Image (tube, rainbow, N blue to C red):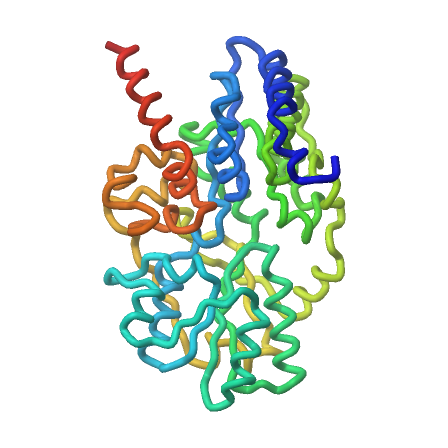
Amino acid sequence: MKYIDEFRDGDSARHIAANIAAEVQPGKRYSFMEFCGGHTHAISRYGIAGMLPDNVRMIHGPGCPVCVLPIGRIDLAINLALERGVMLCTYGDTMRVPASEGLSLIKAKARGADVRMVYSATDALKLAEQHPEREVVFLAIGFETTTPPTALILRDACARQVDNFSVLCCHVLTPAAITHILESAEVRQLGTVPIDGFVGPAHVSIVIGSQPFEHFAEEYRKPVVVAGFEPLDVMQGILMLVRQVNAGKAEVQNEFSRAVTPEGNVAAQNLVSQVFELRESFEWRGLGEVPYSALKIRPAYAAWDAEVKFDLHYKSVPDHKQCECGAILRGVKRPVDCKLFGTVCTPETPMGSCMVSNEGACAAHYSYGRFQAVALINIDQVATR
């Protein structure tokens, strides 16, 4: 297939769905976690869950970098913009993430802070060069996909000696989070989140390759299928997982072979290694402290590290008491299990991070699946009477 519409063909989707239905074993339950928010969005948008047999369950993972950004990190950025007077640049979705005291970056902007949405890391560096009299800070977030562009602007800022530019680095790493989930009590001890395999992230794997996921197949005996974000990609990935489970296998398979290789983008990896090093620990919203799960700027680039430049100290802040984002990000609960979902918490007025980005589980479910879910709940209630 060559064109996007071919990966959204209805007849092909029904054919794959029929194969899945034919190959699942009666009486056996299959639980697969799609780690990446892009997959969550595709599953909701294209009604993939409704095409799967009843004994195949998709569990939404924490794979949206906006969703896992903890309140304390947003607070640091707001403080820089409101109290320190910097020009704070970041991606659009990040501006709406709820922080402390009912604030967000976009609300801080309404209070007079100079907060600007940029489409790329390069835009932030250009603003610093255009405004040499101002301190410009780029709030950098994302998984391995968006880390190379941040590394590139740090290298360029150093080479061009743009002294009024710095980066508040919040880049996190996918494999460490998967390990944390597999080691969690919900998975290993309590069994409240049964995971038979993973739909591996697509764009992340373009950078890091499929090899880093071999650890989960070998150590934890969990099959991983790296799949693209189009609906046929996701469905084919699920079929490949079903076949592995039926055969008792735990391997890494690459459905997204048109873009992903085992070794990934080595040039991008080398650039990231040149500029960044591992943090010993980093807080993820919903997951808590995750060891060696994030990057920090190397000492050689300390002059462009906002945490060093402004002497920032991170403070953990708990989520809203009624918000279930933490449980949803861990796969323990679904969006409709939250009392705030669809009433107090909507994409226009998000109370939690899962409702901000369109890749967040709550936002995707609100846009594409909330009415169906309510109907299913009502059917379940009738059936139990």
